[in-house]
Length: 334
Ligand code: TYM
Image 1 (cartoon, rainbow, N blue to C red):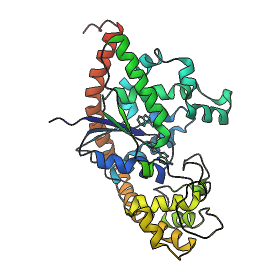
Image 2 (cartoon, protein in one colour):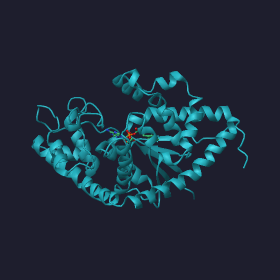
Image 3 (cartoon, rainbow, N blue to C red):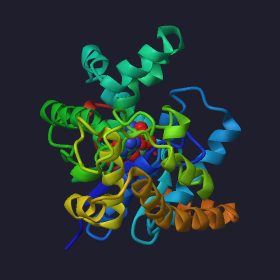
Image 4 (cartoon, rainbow, N blue to C red):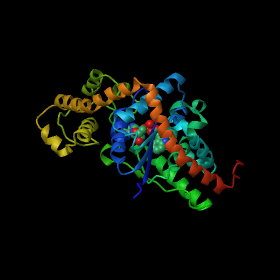
């Protein structure tokens, strides 16, 4: 029986993935690759919607791919590739832009947040059309599932709307994909500001990067903001800092929150933080070591990425050709 397809991606917009990317998405990607024909993409076209230094972008693209592999993405099972290697992403995005309403795109909350922070003169049109490129990424591969963190839900909803709209205007073309969000790890919070999601644009002291050295990771976890009542229990509203630490521990150790609360009964926040730090390092250290090994041989890494791009290209070209035909483009003479 053929496996259903799956697509997901991450931006290479920093020198490392962070704990939110890892727990919110990457862990699930590695689990799902056995049951799905998975396509995992490093979305460099998306990264340039905000200013990037070219040398940094090249480096970060390889670092991101190395972390996918180091975390357990198997290049023999899944296609691991770079978005700009498959031109159909940009080509399909153009077609989808023509069926997206201006107001519809303007309602995307990530765009509203980012453009508000940057101001309209520093906000690119590319940032505005970003979610439509994301829809193209997904729809090219006819996936049944798109595993992501909670912050991507609205973009996947838009993707589903655009797929359904195209299908009803031009005939059945796209699979309507389901968003897959794991409740427990849907949102990992900033250690300094535990009401906001952990993000590369947040407080650097609240951000745990996979590629950071272990001492600085431990230090950040030990300085995590908690509260003053000194009781270790899970209450997202009243105790966001402690709840985030318990959530991180539980996601990695597999212990239930209840079991952890009894385990920490009578202990202090210092004990909680030390243990969370140890648990986090137990998964991050091997990933960092393996990623650095992979980065030491960039030619081999690039070879794996080309292999993935070839596999992705095959399917992407078929979908794009169907789309071009459906909208009424004449096929180029061969
Ligand atoms: P990006 O690069 O911001 O994040 C990559 C993945 O990590 C998840 N994530 C989190 N999960 C839990 N807690 C957090 N604090 C946290 N921060 C990030 C994100 O939800 C995501 O799954 N637009 C996408 C990239 C993209 C994409 C796609 C994703 C482009 N095309 C097609 C899926 C399908 C983004 O910026 O993710």
